[in-house]
Image (tube, rainbow, N blue to C red):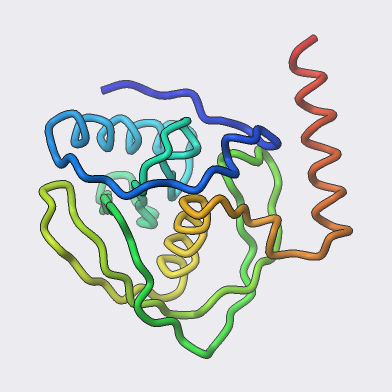
Amino acid sequence: MAILPIIKAPDPRLRRVCTPVEEFDNKLRALMDDMLETMYAAPGVGLAAPQIGITSRIIVMDVSNDEGKRSPLKIINPKILESSDTIIKQEEGCLSFPEQYIAVERAETVRVLFRDENNIPQEIKAEGLSSVCIQHEIDHLDGLLFVDRISQIKKNMIMRKLKKNKRTYKK
């Protein structure tokens, strides 16, 4: 397993819409293991393939708080089947937006259909943090970022700060 570099905003690769996975093989399973290792090392609770430069509909996540009792979830080709009408506003972070936390509105619960790493159809009902995380990561697969869900003024402030930080890091 390997820790992969995470793409940071405002990199345009984060805006690419991902294509469905068609090959379910050992290469895919190894990639997902690397994604999990990368996510845990960052540390984070979710990681989408475009965040490591891969334009495939792949997500890994683990919202458990106990490192001794990890509960990783590997999600391929997810599709939200149903979203609750109840909206929650929760602070979110993103591994592609270091040290930026923003309150974002999302559905409190979602029902999601996906394939696991062995191409077996799965369906889950996610709520609370799991729901927020899976919606956030699916947005990545669709070329959307969590800053797209806040006011333009706040978004501009964050993007300016990230551009400034990127110039500082390059020096």
